[in-house]
Length: 172
Image (tube, rainbow, N blue to C red; front, side, top):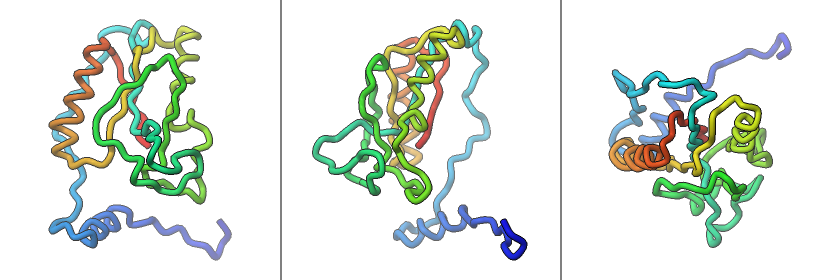
């Protein structure tokens, strides 16, 4: 930054509230807040734990248009239910359904938003015990009530079924 430039913070929180009202909602956006968080300490070392990867990236929808790297925002690519995929395969996952700064960020490197390859390397190097046989997708376009009462319940059931000790969430 040169001497004539100033650094002014972006009023992100107020922008979101104003945007929410402009969309026609009768109250400003409310961010989730919890007095207590249901996290717990690991019962065994990470090197002995089963790791599950949770993502908000979307599986390919054949009839939803461009979803690849550099694709413009694509609401048709959104998904509405928790899903699981085979963690031993390298299937397409995209982020065209989320808003991100497409001028300065691309989706060329799936490892930047879906680090399954890095987790496989960590397992091979002995840094983690094992990987869950599945990875898990969590929708981003829900109300807080639906997220808490449906999506989180569905995700937790899948993680428990796969006996996951530690879940890593990469939100896009």
